[in-house]
Length: 267
Image (cartoon, rainbow, N blue to C red; front, top):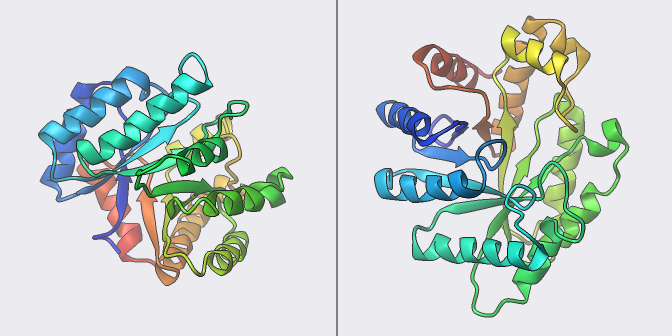
């Protein structure tokens, strides 16, 4: 499991990115995810791809492409930018792409719309990852996630599912069973978000909870409970062939040791 684990990098500029990539190289970390959010969008996002391709071509990179953060001028221009990005992934370097609508979906231009346009392109061979939030219906009364998944899957352009983070394994198990049943004729790779619990993480989340990310009060008010849950989640991922994606900062020896302590010692 450790060998396949993916690590998401957050950074504010190329200098910080370079330092973190050198840390990865020093610690034999090759599976990297680059998000598209906050400062990492538009020029910095595009420059990051060119920089990594030129200087760290040994890495196995998945780039998140946010239709919200990469939106430019209008729907047509934004779609053309996305199409160019996909074509560049084959001309420049065959990296993986995780397509997300973004924190605030653009009207008439979310991941379903973009996939529909892509399906009509001729001579375009592409396989994309899509996000899935198992917790929306139970905890946020949003019942459209399954329907949206089936519409995305029907395009024939999907090769991976990336699960949003949450702390209800029973709900997660229920949704994993559903996804495997619906997509049984497709070979899909599964990935699951993983945060390493800490007092700092708990304090930040309690002060400013993330949109549509469910973390139980049991985990938020007792670090030991959060750690126990994390070990259970890692075991669940392992038993269901779901590759963990570390979204906590890991770029120090102490933090990386903490990551490995959970992955190596799951229940």
